[in-house]
Image 1 (cartoon, rainbow, N blue to C red):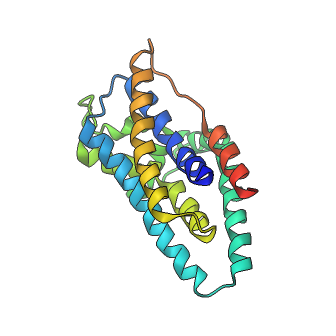
Image 2: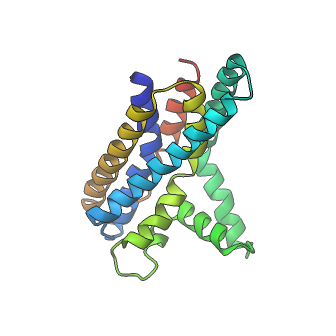
Image 3: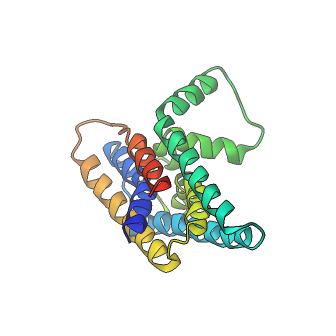
Amino acid sequence: MIKVLLMSAALSLDCFAAGIGLSSDRIRIPPLSAAIISLVGTAFLGGSLLISQLIEAVISAEFCRRLSCGLLLLLGIFCLFQQLIKRVLRKCRSRDFCLKCSGINLVISLYLDETEADCDRSKSISPREALTLSAALSADSVLSGISAGLAKLPTVPLLACTFLSGAAFLFAGSLIGNRLAERSEINIGWLSGIILILLAFI
């Protein structure tokens, strides 16, 4: 159960940071939009758990264990250097670097700045905007879900904990953001990285 709690916490820290970033810019996250963000993240996780079952059907249990460990390490290292990656992407965009696929470009924009989700500048995240934002926040759920499935973490408790912690972390981040005097970006990607690397070895 400790692994389940650690995994859901690691996957929900992005929601916490997004809640702070949006609320500190005075952008409201209505309850329905918050539920959608958490639900989509859980759906991404559930889909990747299904993928892990397909992988298990064709490779050995020992290789599954090693693959699970490797994916967690890879994702953990990515999270540790998340701020550096964002810095590089921002520099590329400032040099008029563009992507032909507008969908990918939008996801990158949201990855760099969650306030871009408020497309209509209404200072409130609509359900439709919540869908787009949740896709950007849920990218790491795919690798994490595959790894969790290969590591035989219980599916229902993991999905339930991820949904509840996602909503709770988003709400907590919103409360903190509302109390900040000016817009703020909180760097907690390193904490997700440490948790994921820890999970790779326990």
